[in-house]
Amino acid sequence: MDGCSKTGGGGLPRTWLPLNLQRDYYKPRQSVFPPFGFHSSLPSLSRASFLMDPYKHRPSSSYNSPFFTTNSGAPVWNNNSSLTVGSRGPILLEDYHLVEKLANFDRERIPERVVHARELPGVQTPVIVRFSTVIHERGSPETLRDPRGFAVKFYTREGNFDLVGNNFPVFFIRDGMKFPDMVHALKPNPKSHIQENWRILDFFSHHPESLHMFSFLLDDIGVPQDYRHMEGSGVNTYTLINRAGKAHYVKFHWKPTCGVKSLLEDEAIKVGGSNHSHATQDLYDSIAAGNYPEWKLFIQIIDPVDEDKFDFDPLDVTKTWPEDILPLMPVGRLVLNRNIDNFFSENEQLAFCPAIIVPGIYYSDDKLLQTRIFSDEEVNYFPSRFDPVRHAEKHPIPSVIHTGKREKCIIEKENNFKQPGERYRSFAPDRKERFIRRLVEALSDSRVTYEIRSIWISYWSQADKSLGQKLASHLSMRPSI
Ligand code: HEM
Image 1 (tube, rainbow, N blue to C red):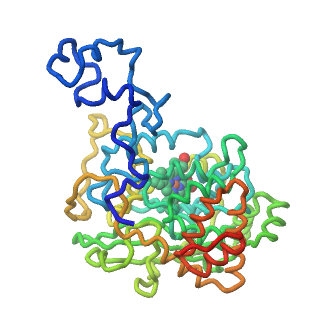
Image 2 (image 1 turned 180 degrees about the horizontal axis):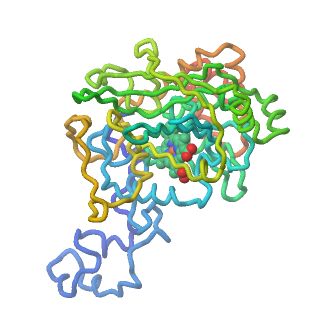
Image 3 (image 1 turned 90 degrees about the vertical axis):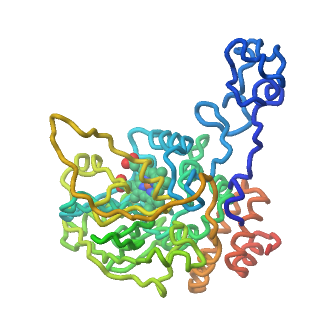
C-alpha cells in the first residue's frame, strides 16, 4: 500500500453538506452566517440564500449527516490516522478529533475501567505489578481468550516509571486514532451484550496490520495458564538516553523463569468452569506460600541512526524486532514477594499511565505510544506561592529535529504480512492446526459475510500461501493470492 497518498479510510468527498445546502453555505470560505450586508460582496451567492431563515436551513449536524462527524458536528475526513509531523510523527496535540475521541473513550465507563477491568496486583518494593484481562468485565472468567495486561510501576528514586505493557509483544493497530473503535469492536455487541466474532472480523478486515497480533491471540498462548506462566512486554518503543544525551530506541520484555504455559480449549473449559478467578488465586496462593513468581527483564535496543535499515518501521507497534539481529539483553529480575493487604486502597486506587517516565527514559515517535501519553494525564499547577518548588536540573531528552508537513496518513513501510507469516511457519504442525481451527471457527460465524471472509483469506494468504489455502478449503472458498 502506498504511504501518505491515502486517508486510510478511503478519502471522503470534500463537499460534505447535503446537496441542497452546499449551494447556499459551502461554496464560500466565509462564515456560514455572515453579518448583514456582507453578502453583497459575494457575487457567486444569491442574496436570497443569506436572507433565508438560518434555523430552518441550518447546516447538517451529526443528526442527519451521512458522514462521520466530531461531537460538534464537523465532518471527519480521516478517522483512521492521527495528525503527525510527516508520515511518522510525532503526533500534534492540535488533532482535536483525536483528543476528543480519546477523551470520550476514556470516560465512557464509570467506575469500571474501560479495558483491563479484571486485575490482580502483587508487590515487591519498589515495584508493584498489576495483571489484567482486557476486554471482559471484572467478574469474567480468567480463561477467556484475550490479551493480558502486564503493568509494572517502578518506584525509583527519581520518580515512578510505569511500564504499562501486555503479554504479547505487538498490538492490533499502529495508530491510536483507531483505539476507541477497536475496543468497541472487541467489546460485547451493545444490543446482545455478547462478544461477537463477526463484529471483530468486520472491523479488523480494514486493518491488515492486526494480523501479527492475531497470530499471538489465536495461538495457544492466547489463553495463558495463569499470570506466573506468561511473558510480558512493554510493547511500545521507548528511548533510553544517557547523560551525554545519546539516545537508543528500546523495547522491554519480561520472561517468566518458570516458563510459558497455556490452557488448551478443553483445559480452559474445565478450569474456568470450576473457578472463574483461577489465575488470581494461583498468583495469590503462590506468593502466600513463598513460591514467588519471577521474571527476567530483557531489553532490545536500536541506535536511531539504524532505524531505516529494516524492511519494517521499528516504531511500528505491530512489529517485533528480530532477536537474531537485535538480541535480548538481560537487565534485571522481577520477584513478586508480597500480596496486597487491601484490594481497594492498594489495587483499585492504583493508576498506571505510559506517560509516567523518569530521567534516562523517554518516549519515541511510536504513534500508538504518543496517543497513550496524552490519553491519560494528570492535572496540577505550577508555580505556586504556597509551595516554592523549583525546576529540577535539566536532564537530556532526544534532540532529533523534526521536519515534515502536517498529515494524517499511514507509515510508508507497512509490511503487514511478513512477520505473521514467519510466526505461523515457526509453529509445530499440531499448533498450526489449532491455530487454523480457531481462525476457521471465528470466520464461520454466520454473520461474517462472504466479502469479509474473502478479505481474511486474502490477508492470511499473503502472510503464508499454504495457510490461506487451508483456510479456504475449510471454509469451502476459493483461495486468493
Ligand atoms: C492509543 C492506544 C491506547 C489507549 C488510548 C489506551 C487506553 C487505555 C485506558 C483508557 C485504560 C484504562 C485506564 C484506567 O481506567 O485506569 C487502559 C488500560 C491499560 N492499557 Fe491501554 N490504551 C492503549 C494502548 C495500549 C497498549 C498498546 C497496551 C499494551 C502495551 C495497553 C495496555 C494497557 C494496560 C496494561 C492497562 C491496564 C493498566 C492497569 O492495570 O491499570 N494499552 N488503556
